[in-house]
Length: 195
Image (cartoon, rainbow, N blue to C red):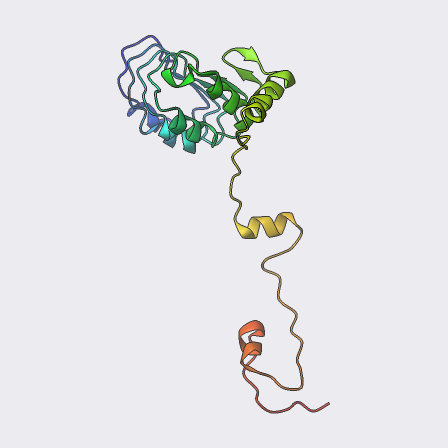
């Protein structure tokens, strides 16, 4: 824990790549560039600093608990674009930032982060998500959807039980054309095959 100090940057800390929990609250951080190197982090407390952008957090895919109370996050759209990529977040504290003043921001968080169980130290209930959804319906706005991590095609095929490395079965016809060479790897054979 390195909270309640006058830490201005995270450069020395980013060498500790096996950290799973880090508390940098109550410092004077305004830039967290480099923190993306701490990919094992599950809990990160950055409350009461001077942070204005959180782009570095987008690469912390294991993050489950994030504290951002009372910082200088102004750009709600940018902040949302980063937070929604933290798909494993269970707890988020973001109150006290300019971007979180409007209730719409909280509603969008509830819609974009379906795994979120605690928002601003309050348990998220199903009713909260229902209210958020009704807000969008009432104002005829598109309901925000959770961020979908793009899965490479080979992983998708494997999850569907298809092996992308499996050899194709070739069927030879009486005549072989150039497509057979490309599809099956057979040499071009222009002659007719005998029965």
